[in-house]
Length: 52
Image (cartoon, rainbow, N blue to C red; front, side, top):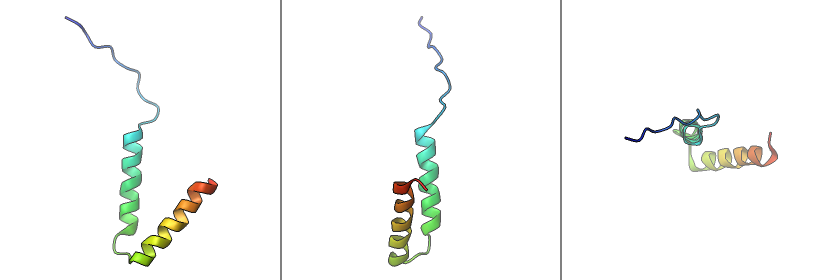
């Protein structure tokens, strides 16, 4: 019978990280109008592009 080797614990869990990001964005957008959502996206995408 073969045994599975344990892999080293991940330093960065991509799925977990992106799930947390999506949940935070969803919470930020609750109850906002279309214009407010577009402003939110515009402001936050600029932060990601500039690294600030």
